[in-house]
Image (tube, rainbow, N blue to C red):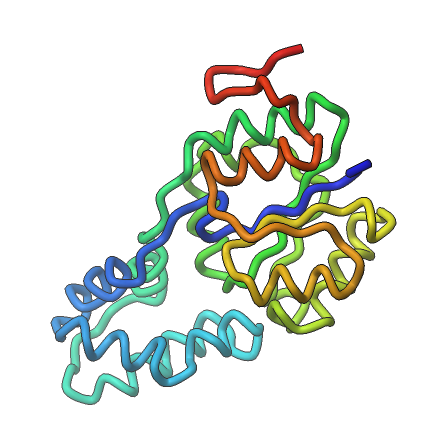
Length: 216
């Protein structure tokens, strides 16, 4: 019996597109999107940000220094928001999470993400985030990223649930396999119909459930 469901944030609850982030930030700095991609993702800066190894201010300072071709002055918040404004909520997951909770199962978020992405999503005040999550485990807060073992241990402590009664939905196979090695139930899928099918498979929601509502 599943007592707790952890959802990944990116591509399970919110779709995202790094090309959009690079295009947004390129406009802010007045440079080509390829330069932003190299400076943010290619350099490992984003990875360190998601690990919690660099502060938002430090992130912007490093990015600005790496773009030696521009002298344009930009604010910290504008830069962080331009990179974060690439997320689109997966609307079907609003009712899916409600259906999980209606069955008496607790829900949480387990995500590799940075401070600014989480802050931007929270400020959207979308229905997907308005429901109370019983546990939220974010890589930048625990200084560990999936599939590293440490972040799963943190998630286990946060949800107070036996490992074999945790279900985890993530869009990356390596993250799913790491959860299974710890004894979790875990499935590789994306948000929407694929995620719903996994919730049905593990009897977390009723088979007759649909995006239009849930069956009692």
